[in-house]
Image 1 (cartoon, rainbow, N blue to C red):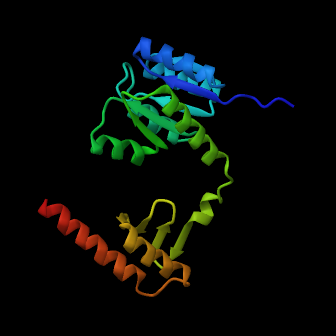
Image 2: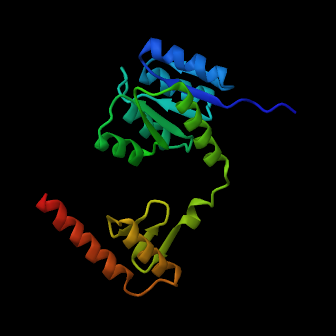
Length: 196
């Protein structure tokens, strides 16, 4: 039985780069569909059902952020953002929107190919259903994947140390002071944010 090669949708407006990447990825065993602008990219995504999307941020017609949002609204297909925007805030925004990886130009086709294989491997690992990844404790809803706690209408993010402590409390049948600690963390974040 022959295994079908992974289908990659490459959305990139820079023609020379798009064609060079498509050739390199095809040489590495991927089936590549190309789109030169955002609208064509979203249309191709819906029609071709790719296994992974390589998405430039700065596109004509519809930018990469809008495409990422549209894809994430009803799909978990892996997205790797490929862009010249290298600032930390751009990388964080892309990842927070739902991108699985973020590669800044210039990069090598070999590195990109390796990143694609890594993201596809992660995607093929069975994940627990989403409902098992959220725990409700009193008024608090804990998003285990997003490392955040929903209190009322506000999300409280936690750094790694606080997250380990808080999630351990939830695992121990919902420690009674979880909500108070989460509210305290939220107040500290608001105070820090207003001082900046």
